[in-house]
Amino acid sequence: MSDTPGFNTLSIHAGAQPDPTTGARATPIYQTTSFVFDDVNHAASLFGLQAFGNIYSRIGNPTCAVMEERIAALEGGTAALAVASGHAAQMNVMHTLMQPGDEFIASNKLYGGSINQFTHAYKNFGWNVKWGDIDDPSTFAAAVTDKTKAIFVESLANPGGVVTDLEAIAKVAKDANVPLIVDSTMATPYLIRPFEHGADIIVHSATKFLAGHGNSIAGAIVDGGTFNWVGDKRYPMLSEPRPEYSGMILAETFGNFAFAIACRVLGLRDLGAALSPFNAFMVSTGMETLALRMQRHCENAQAVAEYLDGHDKVAWVSYPGLPGDRYHNLAKKYCPKGAGAVFTFGLAGGYDAGVSLVSNLKMFSHLANIGDTRSLVIHPASTTHRQLSDEAKVKAGAAPDTVRVSIGIENVEDIIADLDQALAA
Ligand SMILES: Cc1ncc(COP(=O)(O)O)c(C=O)c1O
Image 1 (tube, helix red, strand yellow):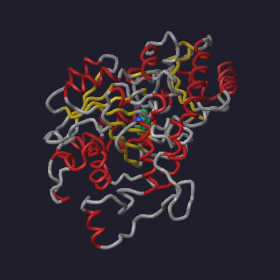
Image 2 (cartoon, rainbow, N blue to C red):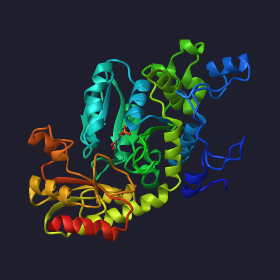
Image 3 (spheres, helix red, strand yellow):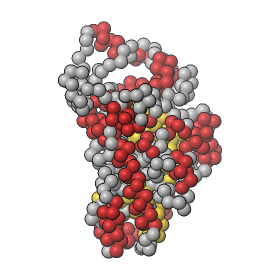
Image 4 (cartoon, helix red, strand yellow):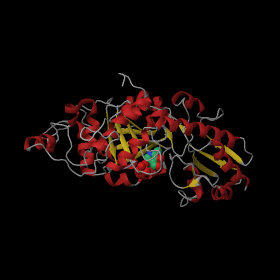
């Protein structure tokens, strides 16, 4: 490899070498719970964090390490951590930053599951979420108090169509001296690299485009190495002596990858949401083709959005790749290679038309996921958001007429033909 390998090269090679024992070229799946120590001193140094190495697969595993190094390299971070799911990544990050009574500010445009997690589950830990309007960064600034510990946004927001002005939000975070956490699931590092725009921590649901084939639940945390935790009493997990590690202060010992270490040796150790080596293998393998897939996903999504925009049964299309879209300029700035593959549109016939479209599609799969090679569709009002009042549905971006698609990498003419026959029906 050259000294500065390109994105495609890193996607394939970062973190991986031929297996030193067998010569296996593909990364072996180290399906083991534990690792034999050289001797008693070796074991003691691993447990005391004086040496890096494998102890127990809840805390680290060589197959997971390949995925970790690869995503850290692609995002331009100092270190990464593989975890059991996207939600586990968010949970682990907040566990590392927050104490009971603390607050964080989150964008009002997020994946619905994250809104649930932040609103309900986090209450049990005494962590309070406040909401900022993603279209108005001043609302984030107005929500800052002396209890604020972080700001959380998605780079491209699920269910699609929203491009976040990362630099504007990063300025608010910097002024408040708190880390900016960016969920970059929908963008992947192929489209947007949030550390280049002021993020401090990135989380992924690797379940989606990173793994890319709709077959594995996985998550990742990437440390940008940009936030200085040393001596900052607001973040005691990082800045105070750890009794179980002989009084070690993680921020001082591990410098610009202390956050990733804390998420591993405190978060994974105690919360336990470790990724299985098999799923790490699936994600690393998926990442080898990330650029090719994302390029095709975006080309297809652009063509499908243009087709829908010109269809007389379609009332509106929310895709930032369309020139008239309200996020088009932000898309040109933050993701010039493409505006992602997940977006929403509305049917002139409202709720009934949405149900009918989903029922009549033949190649699209009707399910609750995004970021598969296959094209996917869901009608939120009759499924994921069914229990909400009509008003709440609209607020959550799930109005009765709204359809969400995740455009796959099939031949685009087949995707459009399927939509065409379903709209005609
Ligand atoms: C943007 C985003 N973040 C996080 C998650 C949660 O990820 P997981 O299902 O892997 O826990 C999802 C899931 O759809 C998502 O779309």
